[in-house]
Image 1 (cartoon, rainbow, N blue to C red):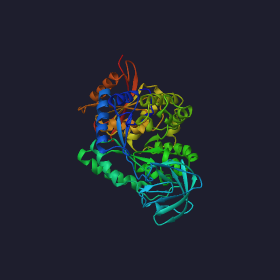
Image 2: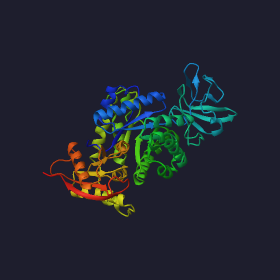
Image 3: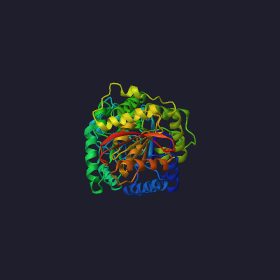
Image 4: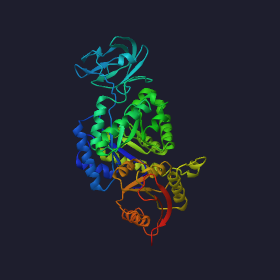
Length: 477
C-alpha cells in the first residue's frame, strides 16, 4: 500500500453483506466504524464478527471503532410524520407534547427548556431550520421560525453558540460500551465531550467493561460542541485521539469557523502525539452519484495536506449506492495529495527535547532513514508507541510496525503512514528476531534484495516501552 492516510468507513445496510464488505476492505478501508446511533446490540456484534473474519481472510489488519450515540437532542414525532414550517410562523417546543403538529412538537431531551432563554437561536435538522426563542414558559419553548422548511420526526436540535447541559454519556451509551467491549472494539468514539472529565469517565467505564476480556480500547473524542474548543488540549491529553466532527460542530460554531478549527485540531493532535480523524460529508454526493464533486476532492485532499491520520466516510458507505466506488475514489485522492507533501524533519526537531530513550530512538530512525534513502522504517513494538511517535512526522519512507500483539496491530491500523503486521515470536535472541522480521518484510514485498532499511527494537526483547536500539540493515543480494 503506497497510501499513508487511512480510511475509516461506516458499515450499514449498504455494506453489511460479506461481498460488499470484502470489496470495501480490499479497496482500502483501514478502520470500520459501527454507528451505535442505529441498530441493536446483536447487529453490532454480528457485524464485528464479520469484519474480523473478512479481514483475516484478506490478510489485512483492520480496526473496529464503536461510535457512541451520545446525548441526541431531538424533536419528537409528528401526527403525519412531518410538517412544513414557514418563516415568521410561531412554533412551540413542548416537553410535555406526545404527538406534534404544525404548531408544536415534543422533545426527547426534557431539560431543554432549562437550557435556553429569550433570544437564543435553535438550529434543527443540521441547521436547515432556524428557530428564535421568544420566551420560555414552564416546559414550553415559544419560538418564531426564522428559516423554515420541512421538519420530520426525530430531527436533531442544536443551540447556536452551545451551552446545552446534556451529559456526554447517557444510559444507552453505558450499555453500548458493554456491548462494544464484548467484541473488543479497538477504538471507542465518545460523542459530545465537553472536557477531560467526560473522557476520563468514558475510559473508566470502558476499562471496567473490558476487564473480563482483558481489553482496554483506545478512546477518540468527537469534537462537536463549542465548549470543547477551549478545552481541546485537556481533552487531547485525556484521549488517544480526536475526531473533527464537522457536522454538529459547524451548527454550533457556524460554517465559516470550521476550516480553521480543522487545521488547528489536526496540528494540535499531531503535536501532542495523538491521532486525528477528519469526518462528515467528505464524499456526500457519492451517496447517490458514482463520482465525487470537485469540491469534495479538494476537501479530502486538504485534510490530507493538513496531516490528518484518517478521513472518514459515513452515509456514503453505510447507506449509499456506491460504497466500494466511494472508498476507491477516496483512496486515489489521498494518494494523489500525498505526492505534494513536503518533508521537514529538520524543522520538526528544532528546539525539541526528548526525555525518553524510546522516543529519541524513534525520531533518530526517521531522520536516518530519510537521509540515507532507506526503503523502509521498521519498528518492532509491543504497544505500538514507537510507531505512533514516528507517524507524527511527515516522511517519505513507509513505516512497518511489527508486533506480536493483535490488539496493538489492529490499533496501529489508524496511524498515518504505518503498515502494521503481526509477527509471532517467542525468541529472546535479538539477532534471531531481526532475521525473523526481515523474512516477514521480504514475504510482504516491503523490502527486496539489496534494499536498506532502518529497524528499531528494545532489549530485553518483549518489554513494552523499551525501544533502545536503532540499526541500519541491508537485505543480502
